[in-house]
Amino acid sequence: MADYLGNKDNEVLVIETDGSMEAVDGLKSCGEGFTKTGANVNLFSINQALDTPLAKLYHYSHKHLCKKCRSCPINDTCGGGDLANRYSKENGFDNPSIYCADLEKLISHIQNKIIDSLPFELVEDSGIERLTPEKIQALRSKNISKDHNFYKDELLDHFYTKI
Image 1 (cartoon, rainbow, N blue to C red):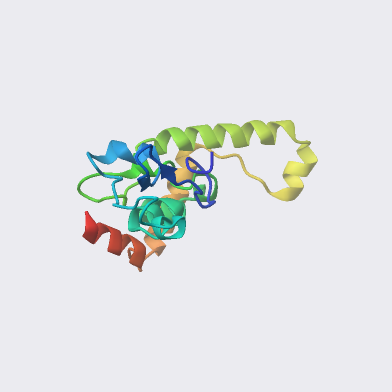
Image 2: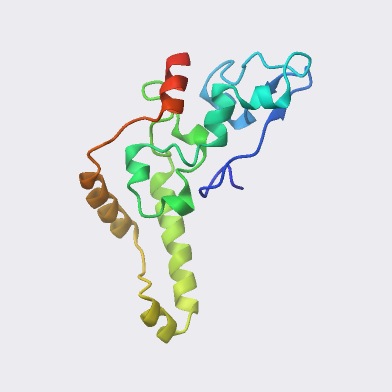
């Protein structure tokens, strides 16, 4: 489940029946031949295959987020969502998930259900606040206005030059 949500690294490498080694199959939805790297079990070690730009991007996808996601108060839980759902031909992976609004609703709903199940005193003492998608968006907008140093990291810059 880490490849869809959260801020953990993705630990998947696909070995096809012909011996090709690629990032996760879900990235095939980004375009014909998108996951083809030329890595093959006959010519590459697993470490070499993991060192390809797309495998690295996938592996660290929850840490390499667009400005909107980096500024979001729930990005540790969401992680920007599934990498394939962030792709566009115009911006590569430098986009929020197409399911961003749905993830905000889901995560705030789950958090609020958990808060509702806790003793009132614990909630009050801890300062935990109920979230709504509107509150998430307001906090993100406030954080974006503070983020004057937006940049794509070297890995993303390197990958964008390859597509």
